[in-house]
Image 1: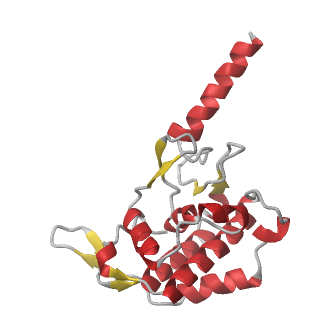
Image 2: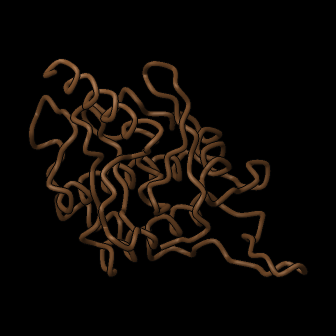
Length: 208
């Protein structure tokens, strides 16, 4: 999986900002929307939307130096939706859907992932001070190949059984639990972890 753990700053429906680190680049990509009911969260409407997201992601690409065309944008949305369905196979959970089959993985989803993973990925470079960065300029297709390869590494790697959905009933964020004990339950402690603590405290007070 692509390293350099960082995370995305998300905003809850209540307006609270919090840091969400799903532990993998490919799972980070799922925050851009998805199939079915998740389409209302779609943020990938124009090529510039994809370059903007790549700048916020753990790739930290300079949006001025990444070129995305309409075909690459369509590939991005197709990859994201395929990833959602492939992730649901592993979590056993599903976001809400009018049609239950909206999150059924198909051979086409696997073909989409493998087709994009076969493309040329972003090229890493070593800086003079010993840090790693991505060679730019780059194409959107290279970023998608990097995301797709990250998914292959995750789904075929040692953490494939640790891909989980947040334990809160109304949160559908997905993460890979890379903690040593393997007991992560929440998308973020400052968001759903705290919500759980508040509900538990209220339940105890009511019982008392």
